Image 1 (cartoon, rainbow, N blue to C red):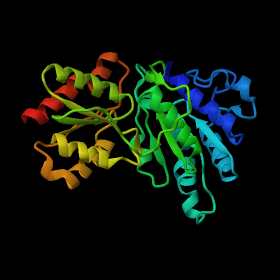
Image 2: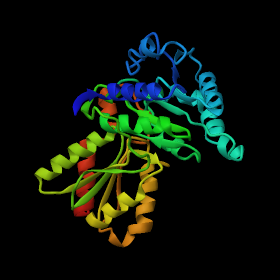
Image 3: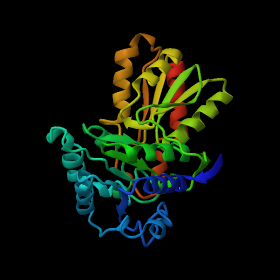
Length: 326
């Protein structure tokens, strides 16, 4: 395998699917002439032309609606949001049109569309550009929500999402586009809804997804130095959630910590906590601990960002709490 960047893995996934299927096209702000705000679509305009790599005005509601209409008529749009914070302008088309069209049409219309772009904190971008909407979209029947954590699963999951006949929310991270990882030369696809046991362990289970997997892995490595074996699970998608893999792990380790960047109320971590307590309560040797962002808008100052976001120190504290009942 070769080592490529996260952005290159996404580009390969889109380009391969566009070569395979002429119905696939990319639309969004600056995806064509500028090669993408984060250079994810670099070179795609030259290969596929302006009818399949389409620059849009700053009008998320408009081009999201065009994408939904195109999907209803048999095309397979990839709609890029420069950040998922901007998807709030288009949320009516996503939640009320894309997610519900198959149900409301009695199965007459599938909506094979992918909405993709970065989510969450990306440094000093302040409150309006640093939010996590995974749980918002995961709360909507009719949507699938994917949050990859490295170049390998980003490519495999995006190819699957593009081929899916239902709308998929594909959430990335601006802080991961330059990350490198091993990606096969040959074609591969990864199933949506199957979690990955990224690290085997016996003493405590840590569940996470997206860029918070970096925090989970680093905390696990630090705890290993102290003789604690941490099992790390990467959810990969938060709708559907692979509850079975999480519950099997908890039945083995008897302890659970969930690390998630989003705010705590109504979070994915809350849902996982409920499912584990319902299905593996007798196996738990300690209360489940969650590590979320503090319940505040994210500020601009880097010192305050560090305090508010989940980090390795807080994750280690949570692991020690479930181990030693602190």
